[in-house]
Picture 1 (cartoon, rainbow, N blue to C red):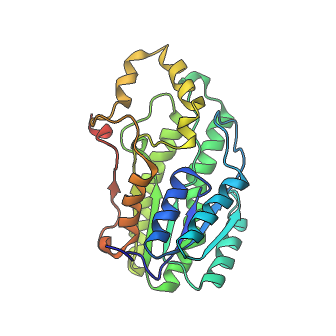
Picture 2: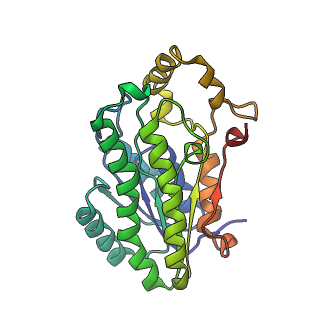
Length: 272
């Protein structure tokens, strides 16, 4: 099957690398034009190296290789006015908006008593307020288009719990609830809203070792919780492209009557 989102335009946040880049490429490969945005810099005191402008340029290059149109911008999703301006300009250029993928997020790991107010504020600001801002910037264009699909990227931590990441877990449960709340109100406009809940994904956030190091140090004081992070299937991490397949399904008309649901490409971690 090909052309599963042909003629559609999709907005993806956090698209400079990792999961966001995989979503942009998968949608473009199936016929969508894309709007890709990323902060391309450090947000808060995260341990891993942030995405760069060069990363976003590479996403643009890869999308262009598919033959689809692409608009890119550097923006912090916590800034609603700036994000709305970028989305409005992109819609004027590309003609419409049909799909919104709110992917931008950050994560820090530490025992509960080492989490600081600033870590909590930065995480909630990006992972919750940033997701809300993304929907608020994109949804009016979906209403104008007569319908569409909004995909909020949560986590297995939004169904189960990610130990040693209370701000992150809090944010991902909030995203899950936000999807259901938006789904209820936007259904009258033929707009579907769902959340996606992957297990650990092989992205720069994970594979540069810094975040894993934080988790390992936290585990030293509470080893019993390590079992919570074991996937039921015999894989440690899934690939961004695996999650992109789920996003593509939700963006396509194949899921035209699926809304207010959680889809979990999680290798069984939330049931184990």
